[in-house]
Length: 248
Ligand SMILES: NC(=O)c1ccc[n+]([C@@H]2O[C@H](COP(=O)([O-])OP(=O)(O)OC[C@H]3O[C@@H](n4cnc5c(N)ncnc54)[C@H](O)[C@@H]3O)[C@@H](O)[C@H]2O)c1
Image (cartoon, rainbow, N blue to C red; front, side, top):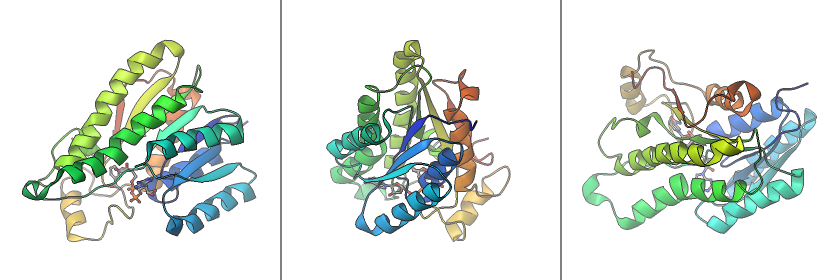
């Protein structure tokens, strides 16, 4: 019996990068997996992931839902429950990064970063709580930058990922009595579209790591699969950092 057999998962931002690796890993462990994607340009990638999972005998559903629209996020939770009959694992992964000098930041920059990186996480959790039960999981993808101010020009991203720490701690207190765990995965530099590993910037990031090597999306997928499974049931309200020793 696969570890996540009979479990239903929803992953936001699952058509590429870390989200896609999480989708594929959860499905390979036996979960039925729904995931969101944002734009028409991602539709082809999303369909390919669904076809791949189905070809291996799994169940998957791609849902177009922009995290900037709360009703779309709520709708994705509902669509998952309609398709698969429940929800056990919510993985809020969708996120954006941009760097800007503080003198150029605007209120709309704040709204963009916070709507996607924080508000959508909150909205998804509020809707998911209606369906989650004993043994369910809420797993959020933060960043090692939630712990430390690594470099200038990252005020909003750092704020957004630190906010997820408060979300994780406080929600774990609320949901603990129901047997629902809440955890935060904090990747460090991980090779994706967001953070290519072959630039001057990536050389700088590598120079700050204890083991100077970028992580892969699959490394994070494996960690999320562990947190989604039975073996992690003693872990809640915690942040798990996977950053090659960047923050060490
Ligand atoms: N790659 C890294 O080095 C790194 C490090 C730390 C944390 N993270 C975090 O990991 C998560 C995934 O990032 P990634 O590296 O795979 O980046 P990515 O840019 O490859 O993927 C981001 C995902 O978020 C989705 N997304 C973005 N805006 C969205 C919106 N408005 N609505 C719905 N979905 C939206 C994208 O469609 C995509 O699936 C993010 O939360 C990011 O902050 C990444």
